[in-house]
Length: 77
Image 1 (cartoon, rainbow, N blue to C red):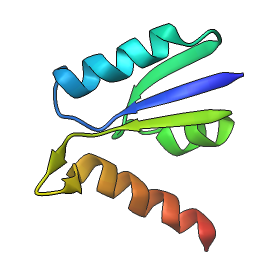
Image 2 (cartoon, rainbow, N blue to C red):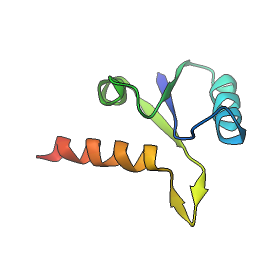
Image 3 (cartoon, one colour):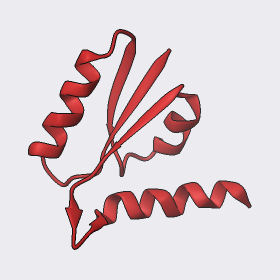
């Protein structure tokens, strides 16, 4: 089992720390990556589970996560 944690925040604040702690508590292989990493879609496809961590701004996810979702939606076509 492999869990991928995707950080959607722009720094290493609360969102990053919560994601890091969640991955540390898992009893399997984990990896923490940034939502803007070049190979992030490949990493998502390789993972058994994915945790998306994002701060909310005006009740919406960060731009980094929005862009990742757009990139992932291209996989349907």
